[in-house]
Length: 221
Image (tube, rainbow, N blue to C red; front, side):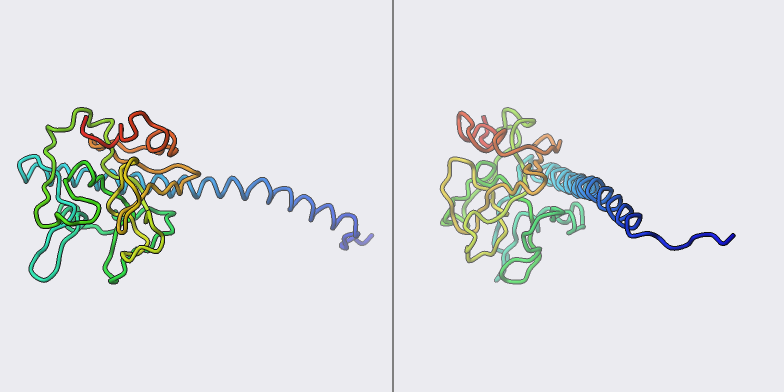
C-alpha cells in the first residue's frame, strides 16, 4: 500500500498556525536576548572607559580630564584624552544607540556623555574653554553615587555639533548646543558608569528625573 504524501488543506493550515504561534513566542525572546547582549557590551565599554579615566587621573595628580582643550590649530575632546589608556575607539560607542559614530566634522565621536558640568568647570556656552579646570577625585564625596558617564544624545536634535551628547547636561541645566541628555536605549534604561567605575542600567526616573536635589547624582556632594 502506497504511503500518503500529500497534506490536506486543514493539515497545512494547522502547520502554518503552529509556526505562527512559535514565531510569536520566539521573536520577543530573541529580541530581548539581542538587547541584553547589546546592553552587556555597552556596560563593558563604559566600564573600560571609566577605568581609563582613573588611569588618566593617576597620571595627572588625581584630576579628571578636561572636557576639551586646544592643541595647535585643532583640539582634543575628553575621549581623545582617554584613548591612550585603552587604544580602542570601539568602547566610545554604545551598542543599540541611534547616534552617529561620527560628529559633524566626520571625526569619530562618542555615544557616552561625560559629566563635564560638575567634573570640570566648563560652561554651557564654552566661553571658558581655554581656562576651565577639572575636579580632583578627592572633591567627590560619594564616588559610588556620582555619575561619570552615561549613554547620551544631543539635547537639541538640530545642534550644530551633530546628534551626539558627549558633554552631559546635569538635570537642572537648560538645553544647550553640543551638550546631551541621557539616552535610554536599552528597554527604556540608560547605561551609567559611576566614578567608582561600577556600571549599571537605570531608568531616567531613578537618577536623572524627579530627584531632590535635581543634581543629586551629578554634583560633587
